[in-house]
Amino acid sequence: MFGDQERVTVRELMTEDPQEVHPAAEVADVREWLDEKGYTAAPLARDEPPFMYVTREALAEASAAAIDEPVYEHADRFGLDDLVAPDLGFEGLLRELADRPFYFVGWHGRVEGIVTRADLNKPAAHAFLYTRVGELEMRLRDLLDAETSWQGALSMLQREGHGEETEYDAVLEEYEAHADSDLQLREIDYTTFWQLTQAVREEDGAVEHLPFEDGDAAADALNEVRELRNHVAHYGNVVHNLDADTLASGRNVHELEGTYADIEAMLDALREWADHETGRRPVGAVPEE
Image (cartoon, rainbow, N blue to C red; front, side, top):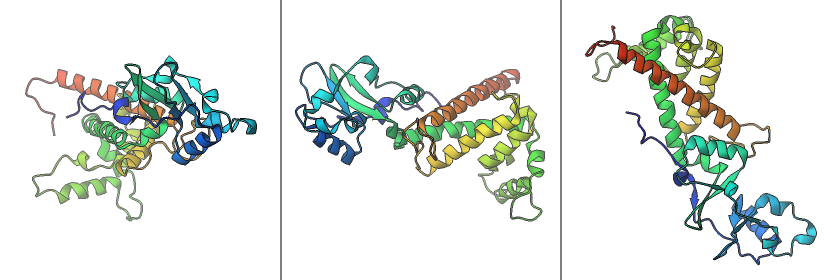
């Protein structure tokens, strides 16, 4: 169900053929153009080396005396540190964008694209993250169902605004609503992500298979994943604050990098557990109900 094809690279996220700036254009005009477009950077139009680019930040810092100067005097030459490969995966791109806000993508001596922190909010990134979180959710349910008494944990949680009803009652209600349907699944398949998180917090049998020291640490990480999941599911921004050095409301690229690292670490642990489970069962055997 989930395989290597479920991935996204710089190629799917970058902006192709970025608009170029004429080298002789005045600093003031280019600065205004970058502001209007909301561009982080732009390459200079050149047919031969040295290839150069300008950034909105650098031009914003140019002195009043420099606004009439040709923009190439405020440009930087492309170096290896300015470039990323088009086949770089999501995790690698996150690491790179945590260090600086943009990279150019080039090959065969040409600039073919630019990728910035804002590109992490594109639909391709949403689809990729949703797939990753979906696999995590599926595997967490398998773990809890096999290794814990999750029903007891949810039976201890009152359902807010529903009198004496517990969170397990809510799951059971959903399960029984599908009793006469060919679509009825296991009880645990009707849990919400929040309910899964609460069960993990309380069940040592789950935590011992996850890369966290205790249930509170595991639940804290899963709460961050749940918040990301909700933004992804509704096509909200996964990165709200594009300046990673500014402490402001909303998720920045460093926080996204940390949450994604937790997702991958949990998936690795859950895959290892699943492989162990499969290996210790006789061929053809199924788990007891």
